[in-house]
Structure formats: C-alpha cells, structure tokens
Image 1 (cartoon, rainbow, N blue to C red):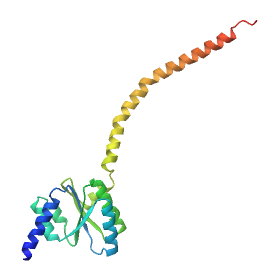
Image 2 (spheres, one colour; image 1 turned 135 degrees about the vertical axis):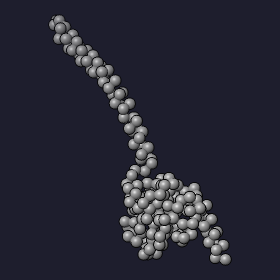
Image 3 (tube, rainbow, N blue to C red; image 1 turned 30 degrees about the horizontal axis):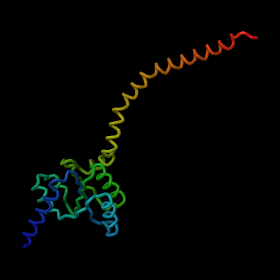
Image 4 (cartoon, helix red, strand yellow; image 1 turned 90 degrees about the vertical axis):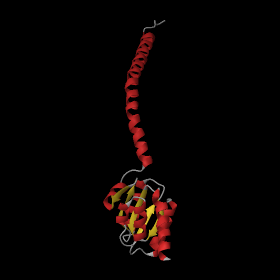
Amino acid sequence: MVSIINKAIVKELAQRYQHTRNCMVVGYQGLKSLEANELRKDLYTKKIHLEIVKDSLASLAFKEIGLEGIGRLLEGPSALVSGPIDSAVLAKTVVEWSKKVPALKIRGGMVEGNVISSPEVEVLSKLPTKPVLHTQFVTLLQAPMSRLAAVLSAPLHKLLGDLEALKDKREKEGTSAAPAS
C-alpha cells in the first residue's frame, strides 16, 4: 500500500514540476511555525508556491523528468519554492527571507531548466528583474537616436538664434537711424 501511495506522489510531483522553469530548494529545519506562516503569506501574495517535500520522493520525481541535479540538492528537510514569475524575483524573495529567518537555508535551484548553486542564487537575487532589464535595453537603444536628433537640430537652433540676433540688430539700427523731426 505504501509503495502505491509513494508512486502516486512521485507521479504528481513529476507532473507538477515538469513544466516549471524556475524553482528554488531551501532547507527549513528549525523554522518556527509562526515564521513559516508569515513566509507562506508573503509568498502567496507574490504568487509564489512553497511546498514541503519528502527528499527521496522528490528526487525520484525530478529524475523522472530529467532534472537529477535538483534531486541532489534535496538533503534533509527540504521545501521547493516555485511560481510563474521571473527567476530574479523568485531568488530575491528567497534570499530576503533567508536573511530574515536564519533557519531558512538556500540550497540552490533551477533557472530556465539549469541547476544553480546557493551562491548563484545570491548573485541572481542581485540582478534586475526582466521588466527593469527591458526598460534599460530600450533606453540604451533610444540614447543614440536622441543624441543624433540633438546633433542634427543644434545647427538649426544656432541658425535660428543668429537670425533673431540679426533681426534685433537691424531693428535697433532702424530705430536709431530714423530721422529726428
């Protein structure tokens, strides 16, 4: 009976994480229940899912879907943190919580299907999110065009200024050269 239940759990985990591209593995040993509740609430508001898994069953599930590397991160009491969000946001959230709650230990994770270590999760957490990167990229693309427009319009502005100065000068000359009656 137990093996049937375990097989069902492995199958369910494999189905759940088969299409997951970003996932973090954390150790939670020593995490107090109040801290766990706060963590889950915060993650829930960010649409991030925290799932406590049995290491051996999760390892089998990840092996089934070709992600043996994640299985090697599952040692001791483990939880999987995943969600349909940017990997940088996921990493930032996990790192923030590991700083708030020392019992939460980052073991590593998976980003776009590639297994990363705990130090790599830390580095990923310091990167800007995808929307910020997109904005920076667009700004970089626009900068040369803005500079080119400024360079091309500068002679026109100078010419306009020179023409206005000439007009002012002629108006002054015209009023001073007018005969006195």
